Image 1 (cartoon, rainbow, N blue to C red):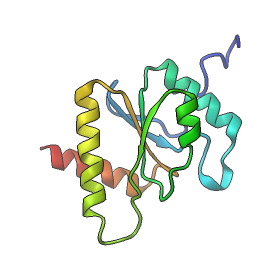
Image 2 (cartoon, rainbow, N blue to C red; image 1 turned 30 degrees about the horizontal axis):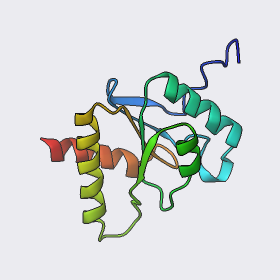
Image 3 (spheres, rainbow, N blue to C red; image 1 turned 90 degrees about the vertical axis):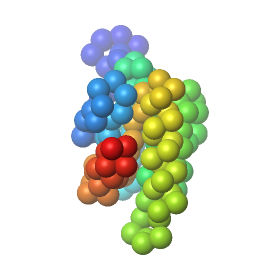
Length: 130
């Protein structure tokens, strides 16, 4: 592929939390209701070209797992829902984020959209790490 789209498309609402280490964005390909495979593949190409190595999802189901494997991304899913009993899931996500960054992974943390839930998780991680 050549031209404007050769490097892929930046994921929607992409924002660095820690430059070149951790970013947040909408689910590659769009949220569940408007998800498009072609867009997902373009966004995954962009992420690969920008040295991302790991995808961490907070969706209730492990959506996009096959696509992540096809594009050679490591991945994990930590379902963060409206349940009051998610402490173990959140802690496991925080440990994964810390260990992955310590290994040198460049991580995209995503939900269906960039929401209060996703940004609250990031805020919690920042507090957890001190």
